[in-house]
Image 1 (cartoon, rainbow, N blue to C red):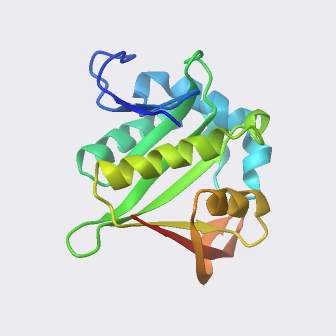
Image 2: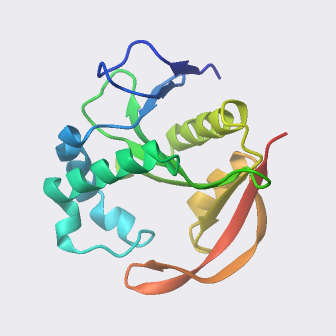
Length: 195
């Protein structure tokens, strides 16, 4: 699979990072595009609910998403987050999903965590596998990350299969790890090491 870590063909003159794969363009987006994000989350609210952190109704508004995008930009500037929104290369007006790297630990650790979600209409097409593989390659090759961790609910078979397709290995169960859809849920821990 070909990929390019773009410094050209930017959508914005001040865009700081983008990754392109065969079919996808992954990039942070600006607060001014908050309506794209609120549309994405509103369309997928019921689909994501079983697997997502608990959110109130205001989370799905453009105003709230503008604040989140500004927080993402600040976290990026502080080296704490790489927030990649997923688009088809041919269509920059609809978000397909998001894959992010966060919880960075440098020095003797050189590790981070990966998280992701996808539009319900784009599942089972290999988009997220393509996106995760590109982000993993970027983390290993460009950031020299040694270890990437992922956490998934035990009954989320699609996410488990995705992680295993991308080479992640199971490491055990984290009890009461995250507040999901109104209650604390256990998660399986997965990891991938830089070869």
